[in-house]
Length: 335
Image (cartoon, rainbow, N blue to C red; front, side, top):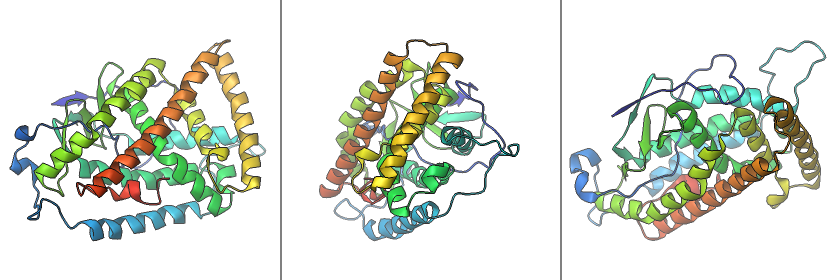
């Protein structure tokens, strides 16, 4: 099955060319039917007790990823990517707008046709997400006030919000690329999945794959009902996505251990971006009464954060029950 790419622009247009590379996917795993997945498709080599000895492999792979993210966040504010007349400066929200447009060029499919998978490997999704977090760290460092924070505060904030925003961006990009009428979600730079897609994990046995999908089945249903459907109904613009990113990035009072100085910076920035959002609604969207829309967006942020915490809890359960170890979600990268 293939899906034609639909080009849409629901907000500001992107700028400049960026090299395409692979990144991650949404955790919308649907429970597979065991009989419909052949052993040839699974390509697994299970141990005698149905599990694999991948813990050391994951640790060796995830630990360098964590350090690489920290190294990116520990850099100073990068040279501006944009050419502005002397004396003209971008606001932090405008910096994120520009960087987010560039980011989308990198994490969205660069092919004209996207294949919708009937059977999908969770490992491929995980690898994409690991690439994604590196590019996302580079994105947030394009916000000068964030880049100038002490590293300790940047790290605490980043691990709090990146995964929840990933969930929102993946759905936003899926709707823009595949269309609002499709119940299909981007998995990586080549493939998409839908509610009927059957998931397996190529590093564990078929039986364990079924256990994992059954475990996550209820979470998938909650994600669709509480997040995907409301998100689609709003029709969020690109400007609003940039605002959402800033709102999540600077919710400094939700994170333990943040310095008072950073809290002060965050409070001021939230006030500034609220004024910019007001101007966008008033002059661009011509909305004089946008309180309901803004409340819906804030609920979506809360739902995305709740989903991330729930998914992490499910991954801890999967580890305890010796089903599968998703190192990314149980690492220090995710709060």
